[in-house]
Image (cartoon, rainbow, N blue to C red; front, side, top):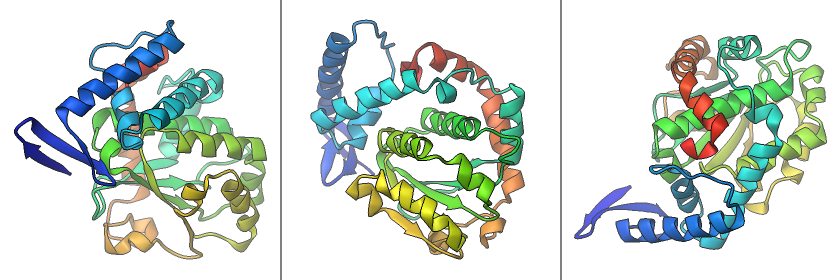
Length: 277
C-alpha cells in the first residue's frame, strides 16, 4: 500500500513500517557498504533492486536483511544445479515449461498478494530431475520479481497442487533436497505469506512432515493442508483445475513459457550477476 507525504510516496511494508524515500536511500546505502566490505568481489549495478527487496522482506530490520541477503547469495553460488545453465531453450527446461510446474496467476488476491500454483506432481519423476523442476520454479519466480516489484511489498501465496502425486514423486524429495528448498524459500526476497497444500493424499503426510521439520516456527504457522481444494476460492478466481473459473493450467503454461522465452537475456544477465534482478 502506498500513501503520500511531503517527502513523496510512502510504501507500507508491514507491521506499521513506512518506507519513505529517506529511509530507503539511507538503508540501501548502509547495506551496500556492509556488503562490499564483506564481499569486495561483488559488483552492484546502479538501479539494482535486490537490496531494496530484502529490506522490504525484513521490514527494514538491517540485521535480518544482512543475514538473509548473505544466505541468498551463498545459495545462488552453491546451488549451481538450480541457478546455472538457465537458458530457457534448453530441452529439459522447455519440457517443464510446457508441463507448467510453476504458474503465477494473473490476478492478485484480496490482499494484493501474488498467487502462484506449484504443481508438485505434474512432471514425470522417471524423466525429469527434481533439481530441474526447482530450477524452472526459481526462473519464473525471479522473472516475477523482476517484472513486478509489488511482490516484495505484499508477498506471495503458494498453492501446492498435489493432485496425482505418486511414490516416485515422493522419492525424489530426499531430506537434503527438502532442506535446500525450505531454506531457499525462507531466504528469498518475496515474503511467502501462505503455503497451502491442496489435493493432498494421506500417504504424502510423511513428506510434508519432513518439510515442516526444516521450517522456522513462523513459516510452519503459514502452512495449511487440505485433502480437497483451496481456501482462497473466496478471494481470487482460481484456475479451472482447482474448481475456479479462471484460466486453465494449459493457458497459464503457454503464457509463462512465452514470458520466460521473451526474457532470455534477463537470465543471461542474472547468471553473470544476480544483482541484475
